Length: 234
Image 1: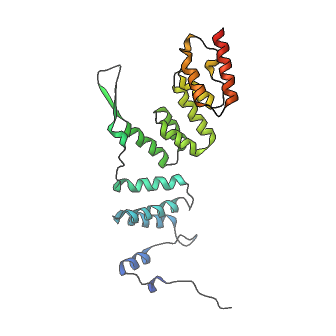
Image 2: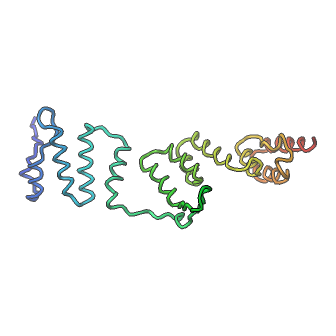
């Protein structure tokens, strides 16, 4: 059997003198009892200072990170490295919502605090850039980004989606006919039909929601209508 020598000498590679000098001066690869980790990292850091290209900067930064962490990393580490590297080359993403600014006046002063919806979107995006889905969903629901929250949660798992939907429903007044609709669409008997009184307002919009939108749940609709009728008869 013929053994093929896979060792390639840098001096024989068709590379320019600058690249060849770089390879020759590199104190790596990092080998136990041969090269020193600190020396290799310091070499990479010196090279990082001299590069102006973002891609080259990213590669040196990645190498430094892998050396420091002994080859171990998480997805968040990569995201942090990418975002840190992009700071000098970043092009801002413009959101349509940035044109809509909401002014909130502090109760303790007459000064107006302007909060851009675009800023909220940026914060939501930042959570996701680092893979922090849980905090992103909490932030979205707390800041009325319901479209983003519901879409994201629907792609995560059923539990997260149900949690966001519940938070959304709880934002509505308890006697809103929309509550009645969402409750029966969720397979539950609407609260209004079992204890209808003055606090629920007019019963007609609630009944209209039930009969016009839930034709695929005939048994539940029947139970809801009968319960509403019994409540009205009391």
